[in-house]
Image (cartoon, rainbow, N blue to C red):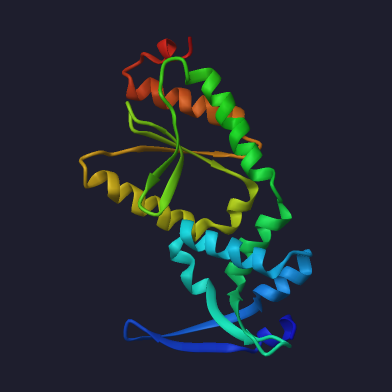
Length: 205
C-alpha cells in the first residue's frame, strides 16, 4: 500500500452524534519507510504529538493491520495536516529543541538575574516555552516548522488564555520566530518596560 491509495480513501465515522469525514493521505508505516525509521518510533512520536496537541486528534486515526505473521498491529491513518506536522519533525530533526534551548539561554543572560523564568510550565495538556510569573509574560519560541501548526497554535493559545482568565490573570503573549531572535529580545524588553511601568533597565543588570 502506498500514498496513492490514500488519495481516494475516505473515512466516515460517528463522533458525538456528528458524522465526520476525513481524507487520509498516508499512514504511519509509509512515513516510517520514507524516513528510514522504525514503525514503533513513529507510533511513539504520533502519541507524543497527540499528547501535547489533543486538538489534532482528527488528523491521526488509530487503526490496525495484519502483519505477515498474522498479528494485529497498530497503525495510524494520517491527513494532509497530520502528515505536515509529523514529517516536519523529521525534516528538521533535532534542530528545534536545540534552538529553543539556545534562545532560552540567551534570554536568561538578559533577564535571568532579575526575573525567574519558568521553562516548560505545564497548563493542562500543554506547556509554555517560557513564563515570567511575576508579570505574567509568556514567551513562545516558534521554529520554522510552526508554519504547519497555525491552527493548533491558535487553539493552544486560546485554551491557555482561558486558563489564566479564569484565575483573574490577563497574560501578555510574545511569539519569537526562528531567525528573528534579536527582534524578539527587543519585543520582550518593550513588554517588560510596559508591564513594570518603565523600570525595564533594572531587569537587564
